[in-house]
Image (spheres, helix red, strand yellow):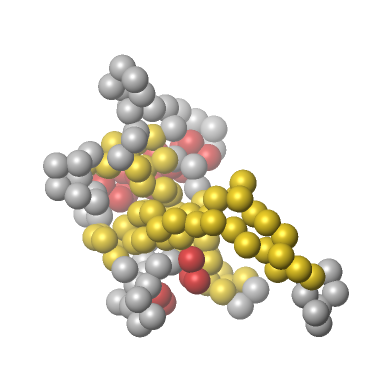
Length: 141
């Protein structure tokens, strides 16, 4: 599956950048005001919510991070998370974090030819996630 065939409802591997690890490397030699930085990152599963228009030569995606750590110490689902079942591995509960991230297509993990898709959520589950996410960003419960 090519990057341009990534669509809403798919769980894919995205590169999560650890922004607290950014280190200045050097100024760009030919572009004024541009610099090179190094930042640590890790592949993590994300749920694609929507594809945005092209910006800066890239297709951008709105994604929600997926975690297995969606419960507090008492075993209750954290307020910032929503349980979505066994989305990544059988026998392991997955949760989406209801905080959107915007990532360009070059941060969708691939093997050089195709996107690494974990699975596609069933339409009803994805529709419920979209509705809850929209209510959250609109300030409703």
